[in-house]
Every structure is written in C-alpha cells, then in structure tokens.
Length: 622
Image (cartoon, rainbow, N blue to C red):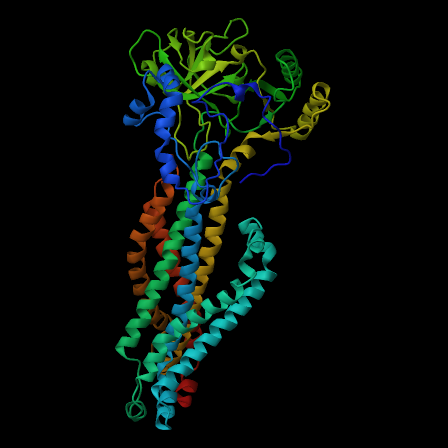
C-alpha cells in the first residue's frame, strides 16, 4: 500500500499547518484499540465534524454539514480498513493503482469452469465406456466382489488420476513460471501458495476432486446386476446418451460464454483507444520541470524549446491528461443559478494550441491580455453555468485559494469556451472543466507540453535534452509521450484482456479434447454401421454430415444457454466504465460459429479417418 524510498517530515509544511477542516490535504490513518468497533467510531463522526467544520461548510456551501448530508451532498466521512484498499477501493487519489476483486472473482470462476470441464471429460469418457467396464464389473461380481469393492476400485482410479495430474501441474507451473509472471506480474511464486500447509491442502483438494469425479461412474457400475450384464448384448442406454449429451452442452456453453466475453473485452478496449478525447494525443511530449524553475526561467525554457524546427507548439499546465486535477466550483455572479462543481486546470496561453483543443467560442489566453482573472470554460461547464452563452459573464467562486479576500469573492471573466476533453480515464464521467491562467497563482506550470513533428523523433528528443541540461543541469532528464502515458490508465484492462483470452483458450481446448476423446469412442462403436453404409453407397460427406448433425444440435442448445449468461456478466463488467461500448449481435453470432467450428473440426478428424478405412477390413474384424 505504501511504497517509498524516502520519508520526509511535513512539520514545516505551512500549508498543512493551516487550520482547514474540509481540504483533502493528507492521508489520515487511525490505529484502533483492540476490541474497538469501527462502526461505533464512524457513528461519532457527525458530532465531531459539526463541532469543528460546520462553520467552514457554511462559508463555502451556504449550508451546514447536517443540511448538506440530508440533501445527499457534501463530504462523506468513514473508516476504511487498510486490508480492503487493494482489492475493494476505487477512490480518487489512491496512493498506487489497486487490484480488483472483480478480476479475482472472474478468474476464480474461470478456474472453476476449467475444473468442471476436466471433470466432465472424465465422467463423459467413463460413461461412454460403460459397456466395456460393465463386462468387467459383471465378471468381478460373479467372482464374489461386492458393491463396496467395486466402488472403491473406481474411486481409487479417479483419485490416482487426480493426484498424478496435480503433481504434473505443479511441475509445469514451476517450469512455466517465467510465462506466468507475464500474466500475473510475477506475483504467483511470491505468495505462500507453495509453502507451509498449503501443498498438503492442495493435494487434499485434488483427492476430493477425484472422488467427486468418480462418484457417478462408481455408482453406475456398482448397481449393475451380473446376470443382466453377461446375458445380453450391451448397448449404451438412453440415460447414458442423454447424460453425455447434457455434459457436452454444458462444456460448450461455458466455452461460448468465454468466447463472447473475449470479444466484448476486445471491443471495449478498441472503443477506448478510438474514442475522441477532445485533444490530439499523438506526437505530444510531456516534460516535468516541476517547481524547479521560477516563472521567468520557465518562460525562457519554453521559448528555447519553441525555437527547435521539429517542435510545432509549446504549452504549460499544472497537470496533464491521466493525472488528477484540483476541484473547483463557480457560479455566475449576481444570478441565482446553482453552483457548478468541476475540475480546475491551470494553463498558459500555449496549452490549448499545443493540445489541439478546439476553441468553440470567444478567444484563447493571449500575450496581449491581462488574463490572471480570465477563465476558459469547457463545453459542459458553459452549458451548466449559462446555457452556453457565457462570453463576458463574470463568475465567482467560494474556493478559498481563488479569492484575494476571505469575505469578498474575486470576480472572473469568461473569455472563451473550448470543446470538452477527457482528462481522466473513461472509467470516470466527463467533468466540467475550468481553465485558469497560471499568472493567477504567480508560479510556473508543473508541466511543459510539446507537439513535435513525426519525421525526426530521436533527433528532437536529443535536442530537447540539451535544452533541459541548460536550465536544469542538476535534474535528471525525464519525458514521456502522451499516448503511452494514457495507455497506462488502461493497463489493468489490457492485462485482464490478455489473461481472460489465454484462460478462455485453455478452457475451450480442454472442451475440445474431451469431445475429441468422446468422438473417437463413439465412432469406434459405430464403425460397423459406417462400413455397411459405405458398402450400400453412402459417400464420405454423407457420413460426415451424419455425425455433424448430432453435434451441431448440441452446440445450438449450448449457445441458447450461453447467450443470457454472457449478456448479463459482460454488462456487469462494462458497468465499470462511464463510457462503454455496447454488446453487438454479431458477437453472439461469431461466438456460435467459432464454437461450432471448434466442435466440428474436433469431430471431423476421426470421422474422415473412419470414412477412408476399407469397410471390408472393418467387417472382417467384426
């Protein structure tokens, strides 16, 4: 939760020593006494807040804390368990990117699906071979074996297969550790999963899994009567066939859900990458001299950078897209319209041009104007404040740092309106944005933004570095491209997409392997039928269609079951985005076609192989 190289005391930070009960200035941690109730402490917050902060609330919001709370506005004070932050917290100003409990649940569910598919494969093949194993069970019963011994045999077989598989899985996990690290960030083998009592528990779980997989085959064979088994030609019963088909449907329903999920996730990531952001992120470089340059030095630095032939525009700002901005609120002076709460961004005259933000009305900040009390509004801010007709209107703010005198709001003039920009990720809704000229705060912007030409990027970076060393010889040169910086906002989604895709492929592969084995056994049982059909004139394609029809029907049923499940689950995932793509009808169609294709290719191998065997050889063997 806290990763750092240095700890610095804040005792001399004058800003933090000011009395301010409603500013989000520091992270506050409480260590509760043993046996304390977090809920009881939280219930005492309103009284404490009213005692200390009510005056500040009334000054800034024209209402006390209790009044704001009743209206559902204002601040919400609560305790958050430290152990809940990593997986369950998704607040502004997190100290570092958090994990997601949703991802843990999704991949846990996929792991369960993979286990279920493996169990289904085992049960399916066991039931398919029921006739052969039934003869064995009949002979063993005739020779004196009872039900308990027969069930024990099948339980032991299933458990041994499961235990051996677990041992092989552990070996493969260690051998493939470098590849796993690409998926989980290297965390798999840093956990205590493979230490202490966990390994014995893993094998115990494997043993239980084997026993569960073997229950149905064991009961099936134990209840068979030896006289009935040995006295008739055994054929697969209707119940066995129905069970096999039902399990195949379940397997491919899971596969179809995963295919649809993969298509939806890929579509959402493509939607994010192509959605207009309100500015041009390409060939845009950000430098961060921070507060190490005073306003005069900062202006000279920008002028030197602007002289480079490959630099087309330079602008400064206190923040850049993808990072946090400060909260700000304005209302139209002398009007009764509601106050508009949004984001504040401190910029210079070159920022709008450098970012290629479209100017919709009025003018940009300019050299020939005293713009320290001027404001640019985003389109949504202008609409909320004055229905879009804002040029020349004066605004006032109750934000303390925006006023020269505490009890006298400083008026600001709206000089321009620009197109909305997505300053945060598309997980968050677009906020009204107020652009303030940096001269208002008498300090240099934190960032220098440069737009460069596309044809000489390495030479341009080298030239920028030379200018950096002239102005900041003791600061390491650091830069990043805006498009790469924005990609980090969706790192978790890209990682999720890669993991989901690989695990989906694994689940589908296992389903096909199970179908491959089942098809091989089914075709072996029907080899005499196929040979007779070949002799009386059936073509190879006729035999293939005969087999395909059965599995095509099963896949169709699987898709009918998969569609509502996939629709519900992927809509829940898309709800994490304020701007999400829709789930398209073609995704379900493509998922169905891919599922059918995988199944038919799996079945076709054995079908074609059987179709080309000389029927005389098959009948002679019979």
